[in-house]
Image (tube, rainbow, N blue to C red):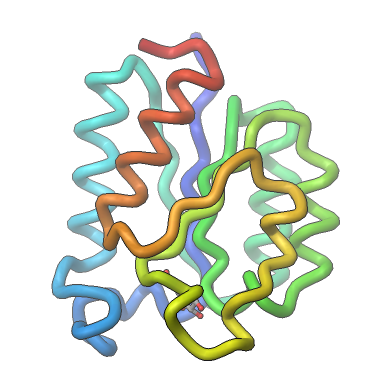
Length: 147
Ligand code: DHK
């Protein structure tokens, strides 16, 4: 059995579709999860999709991914710009890490221009809306030897 790809989402992403739709769009996180599940099936991958508003929970899931996951797609939300602890956890994971942002963080406030996670990620997708998750999954298939 191939190992699943973990798709981890940080704070406030549970409100996707409701908060600032002009920035993050109208799709819900459940819509994104369903689309990822469909594409993962086509790519011969299994996606394990999760969201938490809590830094420690995200870190525990990254630890769990050690040995459990083939790769990690992560949208850490605002923790992207603040969390050395999430960077350290990702550095303890051996497989590929892809960072996703729904919005184009580089077009926004300067505090969003720096990412701790980018110091670890093989690739970064920003500003492609929720389609960014699907692009990341396609790239993950290439990196992990899926279809
Ligand atoms: C999501 C957030 O919640 C913000 O804190 C980040 C990211 C950007 C996104 O675009 O998906 O700055």
